[in-house]
Amino acid sequence: MARTNYSRGYETERKIMQELAEQGFLVLRSAGSHGKIDVLGLRRDRIVAVQSKRTKKFTISVYKKEIAAIQDIISTYKLDNVDFEFWVWVDRQGFKKWQVSPTGMIPINQSTKSKS
Image 1 (cartoon, rainbow, N blue to C red):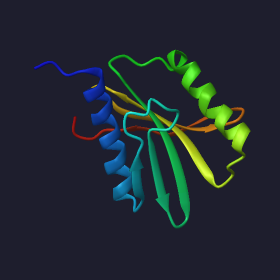
Image 2 (image 1 turned 135 degrees about the vertical axis):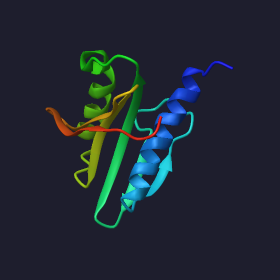
Image 3 (image 1 turned 45 degrees about the horizontal axis):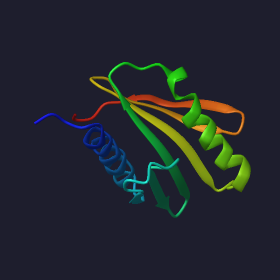
Image 4 (image 1 turned 180 degrees about the vertical axis):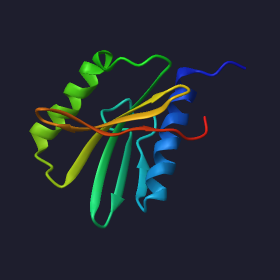
């Protein structure tokens, strides 16, 4: 049976959840919300909100709308205690990650490959 975009997205979110849980986060997934945040990680010293995408070929410019939406949340709600991140799973390469700020993006650990 062919995998749907939903199942591919779910697999990506599960990978994020697993990675954050291994770092000691309590992890929450925003199931089926199609919102701006897919996974939320809570830890005593840090809160991380992750928007995730999955692709076969990676080009950051494709995600301008998603990044702008995250920047809008940051500017609107002024949540200084939350790290907003954008993670893209590139098939056969692993995650590409950025921390998002109101003015731009900073690369985080550019590739974390785990089992696909």
